[in-house]
Length: 259
Image 1 (cartoon, rainbow, N blue to C red):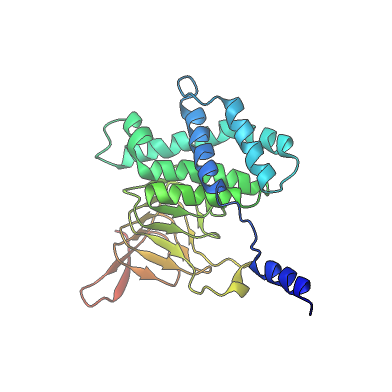
Image 2 (image 1 turned 90 degrees about the horizontal axis):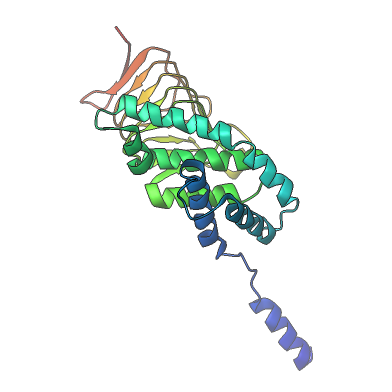
């Protein structure tokens, strides 16, 4: 091989793909603008038009076409998303004795903020926009300590108390009026790449309360409606409705029906 060819080969081996890491900061700004416009449009400095421009810039850098139509479809969902988030805020106020007002929930509750970003990113995922929903969820993760995959399906009146250390996996289903506390993991029992297209995470029926540091694993696991999952429990099988699951002193999980 001649010297010129050797130089070209060396240059190729040193070449690295540009992964647009600056977009992480851009998406953080965009996410904050979205929430400001959703809840404080009269006083925030970022108008809806600026947010739209930021959205289109992000999609252009991601190589996504048809950004105008995608924005219009996304914007059309804002009223519905806001209604769901108002129900989430009311659930926090109703269920947390420390909450002194709804305003406190909107301004100070990290669980509510994480839920807001989830509901926005979930809608973007429904529009089949790549990468952006996941980066938004990681922005919320960094801000709140709560990791909610945008692919999860979460019903109405969802309340996260304290927030820190919560993980909700991609194929999790959470129905209405569910409460979860800090440190809860709704995860997969295996992490094989071959399971990417299967349901790997549990289903939580309506009215369930999951206390701190509980772990629920497996796509076939269903936590029955109106059940209580106690702190520090690890569950890998389904729980009937109206049950209480707790850890006894010998670390044996007991399940009993509510009285």
